[in-house]
Image 1: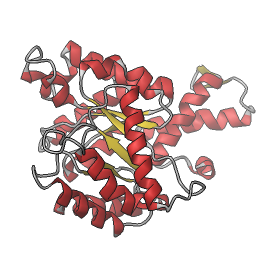
Image 2: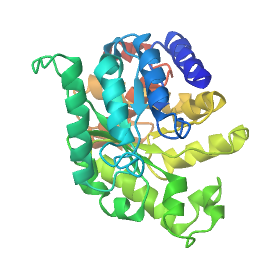
Image 3: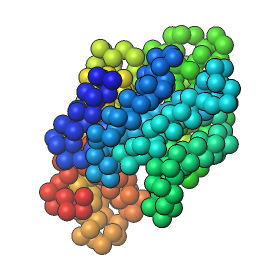
Image 4: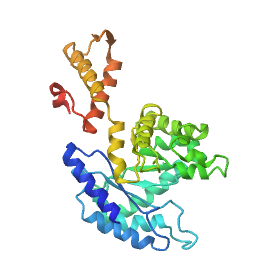
Length: 318
């Protein structure tokens, strides 16, 4: 719990510094809950959320529930997932920007998760269907079977983002992938791991969703973290990355941010395009048209959301 409080405080600090929310905070019911204390942990998260502002204030705080079938061995009629939803979403859904569901294997799993989540939120809003929102889902892809279904999962209208669970993915191969694939070098070189990452990124971009790269456990090696984040973004097409320690957040933001030189070039291209009313133009001896305009506009949007200054003449667009 102290780390959750620290993360929320850091999010507020960076929102003031950047003028926008530059990273999400996901409160973890799954790996963060001691065995046997799952209900108490969910209740503590609900209480913490109730001290936060509603989700529409710009801060993005989510909650990671247990997997759909967790806890069945001790409670055959009720899962930890259902308990998490009942405890947290009936009390604090207004403070939550999204719900993360681990170990999703299929579209059917997404539908099952939505049903439980929607029933819990219906209790919190007193059954007022006109005020009820469809809670976005962030899903974790953690097995080869799930990778096989990623395009269908990404296309689900409730899925907002997909993340890769590296450790569980490797473990699910029964020793066929060595533990070296878990480190910062191996996870960018082992063919099965790289293939899974590419499938997830491709599925997300095809469906207009957000691909989020897995954590790097070497959290004290900031140089290695920065390199991993850059490779995740520039080589594999991920647009976000998970952190497991507050010290990782700024290096990840920096690595995923466009450089000032790139932003300046994008500004020149878009300024010339505006002057030409979006007709083809030449900038720095290169021809640009609407296809490249889209690219450079998106680069400027990414600069804005990561705190990099957009050229003053274009700031009114953002």
